[in-house]
Amino acid sequence: MLESPKLGWQAATQLAAWQELAKDWPISLDEQGVGRCDRCGHGVILWLDKNRVPYRYTDEQVRSLIVLHLRDYHADLDPDKG
Image 1 (cartoon, rainbow, N blue to C red):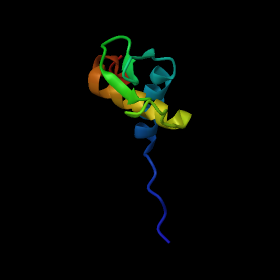
Image 2 (image 1 turned 180 degrees about the vertical axis):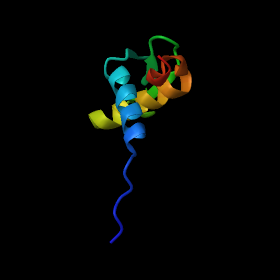
Image 3 (image 1 turned 90 degrees about the vertical axis):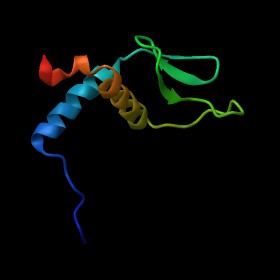
């Protein structure tokens, strides 16, 4: 059986730094059920479907979506560049 690929040391370190930033990143729910970044207003996560039924995410999934947002829209915060 093939072993799952693993992140290299540098990639794991970089990811951990982004995850630390994402841990307390402010996200606010708008009237359509979208979690929006308090800093830039972009949508980060869809909390409610069109019938206003909440989606279920694990904490890890939420953090991953926030990390994705930070890397795409707030690259100036890159921990490696500091």
